[in-house]
Length: 330
Image (cartoon, rainbow, N blue to C red; front, side, top):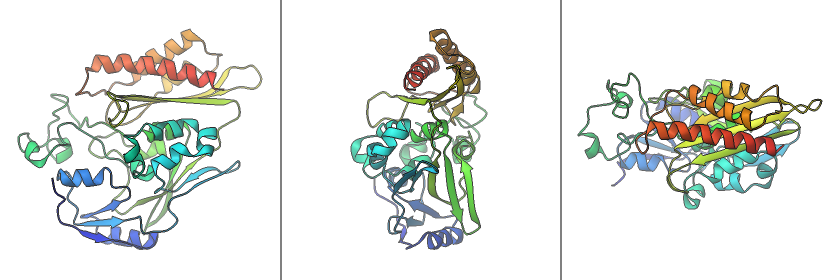
């Protein structure tokens, strides 16, 4: 499949890029790594008239850390750089693990963390050739009124796929988003909409200019687990990130974050599962209870490659494993 015709624009600064997007909101797309966008263009899922290349802008690829402000990552930092960074491995291990599980090494060498965070949701019926899509009625994501994944579904069940997002949510990360209208800071939790048609709140004229992760609390541990059909290349069947903090006085779990992703239109902040771990020194019964609660919270499960029942069993198992591992990592 060939790329459609487009104009290639190379701004030299973020303000210039924002100005271009503001003037071409209906027909411009940002190009960072290009590992997802170029495929979508070949499939004619998106057909922008203008590609705005961010790679010509200096200073957008960096990993910086200090104990007071935590971690700061530039949006064009490759996933390989995030996965291989010693400070990320040491202080923010689940982010390193999540970045290392995205696709394959060749893709991670080009794909950026900003692009992964803003990755569009995926659907087996949508992410095919234009000829293929002609044989199906337009779905919710194409402006129609049907979901081909969940027959009779009342909304889009396209799956939320970015592996780094659940790890960033568990770590309490924030995004710096800029446009000609100004700058806003947004928690990664609030960035996600939970809607398959539009999985994040990024507007057509906005750019993610930085990802910031606060310093983890003392006596904390975390774990990230990805389940996929194959060990590399494939999108996840289930992603689970768990972050736990242990109280200094009585050794109990003072704070817990359980995030489940890649099961439906958005990541699930499993607060009830987290509640099964807080206020106690969790053991196997508590880990089991957290896994069972996570299944109850993950109601909007969609699946093409596996049964929904399999995915629900996988959610419980992975939450148990991740919670146990996070507690042992403290």
